[in-house]
Length: 340
Image 1 (cartoon, rainbow, N blue to C red):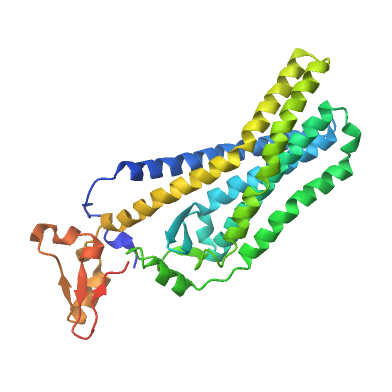
Image 2: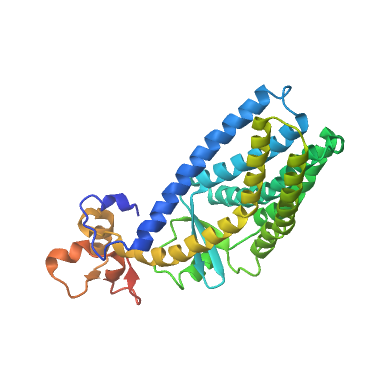
């Protein structure tokens, strides 16, 4: 049933939010804001490249466009899904709250797979950009033709495509997934837009993690070696102060980007650990007032069922958390929990 029937006059009870809960909500809000800003800036840069394509170095424009498209895909998929990760033993599920829920759960699952695909392509695109800047400073521009650059972009795109196909074609049983999740959580996810993997080890996730981490090995090596080579090339070449400053800044940025995937991985593990604590508290602050849920109240009355409350004063019985209220029906052999 819709929770809007009884949420108007309800009172929240229970312990106040902890520091980790507040931090989790704050980090998610910051994540949405940063992705929105990043999407706007990337679209603006794409527009500038299209407008000035003839004036720019065509090879670098292709590489930069390839990177910006991946950045835009990452931002768009995160904003459309806004997922909450739930883990129970080997089971991993995603509850979606974003605009993708207006279409279907399958659409949200595909968007989440596209997000992982774009993230893999973004890591490989950084290697291409580092190699291009090194070739430019080493007077090896002839090696980087337009056709060869497009071939490198397609080659960097193929490994992520394998992971994308595996995630999109993965089939899961929703009832089985809910059953596995409820081993660790008392929340009712039956009305949620949820997808996931019943077993972590029998899913495409291990392969995706390998595809996200393995490219970083040459990435770190290239960033370290090219950094020293670029220092040598910058010292022996004659260029203006502004050009020298630009190359120095790009070198620092490429070095920082080499460590960004590890930061993202650590951030995901930290948010996942926060969600494990945060998820158990959400159901304890859900209000319940059966006087404003007429359909539920009529069902109780017609079925000669009784509401079983804990031993608490009467003035607080109607605002108890949902999981503390049980319904006992003579015609039922089991005890029903309130569903909404």
